[in-house]
Image (cartoon, rainbow, N blue to C red; front, side, top):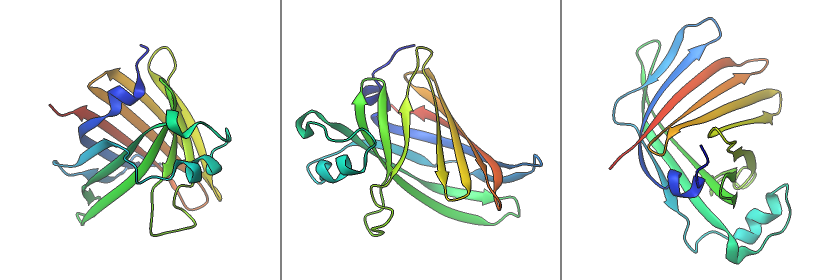
Length: 173
């Protein structure tokens, strides 16, 4: 399934998520009502700064497409405690099937616009990537069921971490 990743991701999504420990225990579940939005990046992003952080080097700023990803909601931990969460990432599209993903943390200079991983869809609509954060390895498998639903499966393993995150996204009308 070949898709234009920019066109498919753009918009509002309902988010469902489970966090599972290495022993199979449920560490957390996202409470109903969690949302994710892929919004078109406006003129507020300095793409030249982003370009300096990419592994591919310089590019024509006029040809760049980008989406700002924002997710938010509440998670119920295994012990019953509820916590709010919020994350932002910047997707810079390098082709119809691929985007480089950056941390979007304007208030934290050492992390803002730091390269995270690449989403690069194969013919079946799947992508695999890794990110090493000091001693912790983050591995992601992303799969599109169709243009209105996709899944992300993260495995996080390190000296103090060993869990998986299963996320399902359904496009809202």
